[in-house]
Image (cartoon, rainbow, N blue to C red; front, side, top):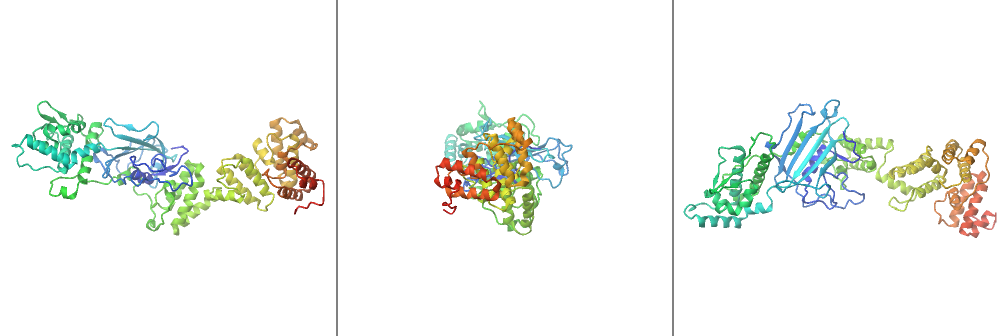
Length: 616
């Protein structure tokens, strides 16, 4: 469905990343794991950067059943089906919601195939540090949203992820559980009501949490038991202080209301608590109940000993999330436990996970290339590396896929670096230009018998730089004026006469290129409306063209204007040996260079002096 030019991730990878994403502890790379990854790193060669903070919570999400809804197995996925998983982390109390919807049914065959795994591309959302910024809820929570679409054109899945900070901040948790604060409240209550509270057991923090949870749970689920609480109720007094004043701000935050008659009114949801909850107030109260359950569970075992506190069963949410995303039984490799784990984030950049079957890894690679073709070399590098790490039958399957990619003209990042090295260049050189690369290519081509390999290496450089000029030079492609100029080795400012000179040299050097060379002259003549070039094409007649210094270097295929005399003579000699019929033209070029450099060696060589030999 998605046509975005950015990388995506498989549904299992999204689940994995959700478990790792902690907005309170961003990584050193600064990249958001759910909206910007993959790739893990914005630029290559910075793998030493931190991409998961060591302080990040390794979330253990548990399902909030009253807020979740999963369509039954076997139901076709379409506009009538919705999957919603609500969860809370049993460690940090962050809240998670994953919603899966489908916008179409007819013609969307992939979404209902049993082996279909969503490939999800981030489309929009709101996060910290990004436009338009995170959402702040009415209760002061920091909320982030992420919206994805499946990249398969035959799947209409839309996935929304919402992550919200805890309701009970550090100050509220301290108020409820700090032993000194609790002791102070209890002693003040006993001092105020010594007779009423005589012999009462002093509450522990776990009792305060459990009593507060009971009040809110009754408000949601048991209206008969959710009655006004007397401010002199013994349990209320010792837990929350005289008249509840020490905890007044917290109680009011939780929607308790202090009455004038010395009572506290628990929260009062207006709508029935129908499952799954839709009313924001019901959801708010349910979230508080779950956070209190987490805090109770985190209290020391010695504190909870001999306390009659019931804890609801905590069901891990990950199977529910996998089910909602249609990936509960995604294909896994039976050898997953044997694989060597990479140091570089190759699985992450393919949007895959380590235990996936090799077939699914290959499909993840294909999807990445489909939606993010500009990074295709990087993705092939990742696939190739994973194949090497896996070895065995898994490695063989991936190796076959890599060979298919090569046969289609694809290449890896390492191949690009090797292509530059092939021409004696560095891919990290910021001063390289199209002209210098093409000039180097022509010089190299004239001195090698491996033309096919040379052109392949240049094409990889051109494709990696998104340079049509370099690619057309590699392919001997002549379809536009720019390509014609590159093919003849001239520039837009080159004179008509010298274009004819370069045409003649090109044909003499490579007779098989005559048709392409003629097409190049035709394109230039048409673009310039040049009578001189048109006359040449008709009659083959022309005079000696004017040649400047740049033309001379280009004719002798010397890309470096700082080359020494010996190098210039070597290039000149190669040109004469390969096209002796053009010796006069090459002599003119050498003479122009000699004059420009004020070189006695070159000047005497042009004049035919025998006292200067090329070996000198």
